[in-house]
Image (cartoon, rainbow, N blue to C red; front, side, top):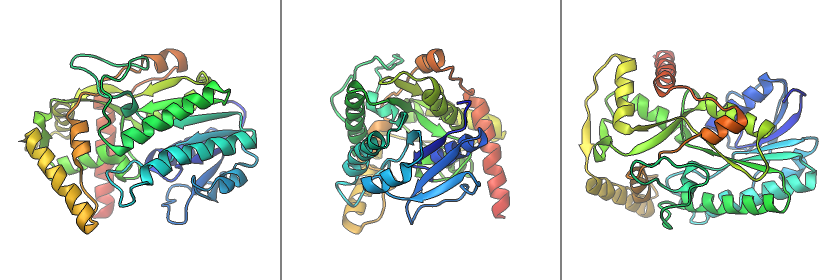
Length: 337
């Protein structure tokens, strides 16, 4: 993206969005950063960042603020454990995406990068590393988030088939420095584990996940805008690792041996059920729900080879990414004392 552009970003105030907006500005672009009145706009104060009010459920506000933009990054999504409003996942993840696409179409936007998720591909079988061509091995969806993001991705592919200029990226489990929100739960997990507050390893920590360093993910988004093929999906991830190995790397970079405790799957499911029941009866936001416990009891081992080959995407080694994140977390603790 050599020529400076004006770019519209939804989800701009989130963990990934804030990092993306600042990188776009660093590269010389101007950004219209979508925010709601309640959004945390910390870190979005550059003169080429225009904070624009709107909502992905309000198509007219989107059209108005896209005026003068040539590209759109659509990151906004409802990615929480639970919602007291049963329709929130569908409205935000499916209807919200359609509103963004329709507004982009009416505004003559050149290209849209849509942020999906690795969970739309489904879990992987033992000792199998999945890719963009792999069919889901189960028809079951573990969470409303997974189901609605899969629906949104199907809609996005249909838009692309009709000539709409969209490229889809599928991030894995993201971690790194930045806002410590639910969207940055892996970094929160590192912090809590290091403090001895979350020593729990579900199913002995043997299930596999793919972990992406946030700086790699941001670069991947920009590469997808620059080089991605319309209608294609690109997995933006890092190394595959069991949770047990992940925590061993935290031990190694911290120089500390942390206490660990196994949580059998059955107990994890009971705890998730209790948290969900508490949420539904008392409105107390749950730490986890049974669907997310089940999600973490699967393997999600994936390859980024397509993004590496077609986009020039590169991966920060997991140990190095954890080291950078850990040192940043220590800095944050020192600031608070």
